[in-house]
Amino acid sequence: MSCHWAGEVLGAAAILLTVLSLAHIIIPDEKIKTGMGVSFACISLFLLFIPGNIISLCADPSMSCKKGTALWTTVFMLALLFVTIADIIVYLNQVNKNKHKREKTEK
Image (cartoon, rainbow, N blue to C red; front, side, top):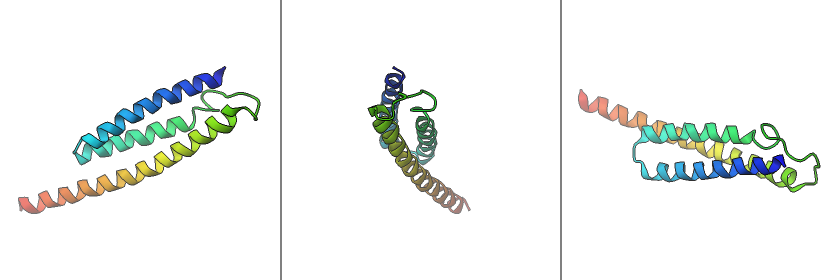
């Protein structure tokens, strides 16, 4: 069934997001963290369209893939997208603050 393959893609993406999250915790540089945030946003936007759009789900609306997979993927990816946007804003502010500190010390 096609819903099985949607689940496989989402599972693989969950592993990718977990590895990126661990790297985001370990890496101290704000610029790298900002770039990682952008990658999180792109991945979450892509994953929003996996179930039901890129990979079709079961035709029966009572099936769990329609009720569960599509719904929870949308909920989690939108939540990830909003958290990622906040993360990007925070790290961009830190990058700008550090840039201004360096400019003041150079004068």
